Amino acid sequence: MNNYILRRFFNKFQIFFLKEKIKDGLYIKNKNKNKNRKILFYFNDYQIMHFGDILFFEPAIQELIKYGFEVEASLPDNAIKYAKFNNINFFDNVNFDKFDLIITKVEFISFFNKSTNQILFVDTTYNKIIEPLCISLVNRINNFLKITNSRVIGKPSDFIIKNSNLDSLLKEGERYILFNNYVHSGKFRIFANQRKRLINYAEELKKTGFKIIHIGTQKDKDNDKNDYELVDLDLRGKTSLSDLFYLVSKNNVINSVSFDTMQMLIFNLNNKKSFVVSRQRVLKSNMLFHKKYVHRCFNSDDLIIYI
Image (cartoon, rainbow, N blue to C red; front, side, top):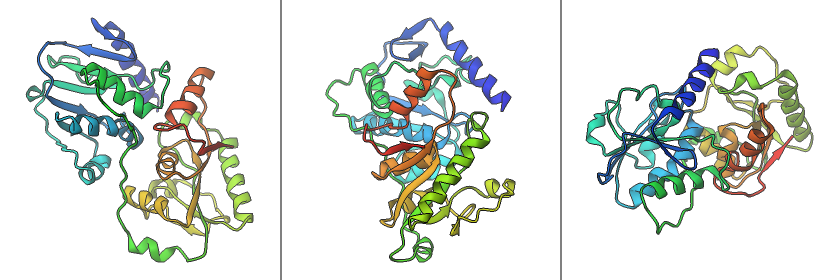
């Protein structure tokens, strides 16, 4: 955990030493005047780019594809199937020199420290934006590339693949809650009373007739010795990423109870409410930024209820 925090801090500190700075949380390295037709989105580090981060950038990728740019992506393994499903070209071994422009997060600055390529670094934590993060990323990148006639939607694409095995587990006439009390990023901002709050809220929903489905990875389950009597269906370690998208799309899966994680974002994509405990932030301004523009990354609908 400490290495991860130090790495992020060091990379973001380095960004301020770039000679070319652009407004709105954008920074350019090795700026040139060539036409930017071949563009690489570089996100190939699972410690920096969690799947939620991929969702934030996906509308910007699709936007450039729509406008005729030759776009490829270098992605962590957990996003490959999603990219393939949504017709995004991806590669493991990338020849950086064949691209006119590389777009990445500021956290990758150390990786590109000796690069002579033109690189646009994007700060997704820049908290002076005034619109949902996905829309902001599309607009900021479009402005850099001088795309002026865009009609931005900014909604990430889905990843719904039918799974008959999951269908057989959900009973007709029942209403389900997806309960997930785990986080894989920012664990140091989670405390025991917050986990208890999630459990208590799921228990209250169960009393109103909902069935509780427990979601998480196999590692989450193996490391968790608690007994969850409220759970009706334990699917920890039994669902893929596309399975989660599919479950959320089901008509009888009604709401989410979770931390402010990817699960919350997927419910938002499906226009369904999430009951959320937000991870702590040191600064109140950062907390407000996340709740207003990151949690609601493509719209401002009131689909997130903080508990």
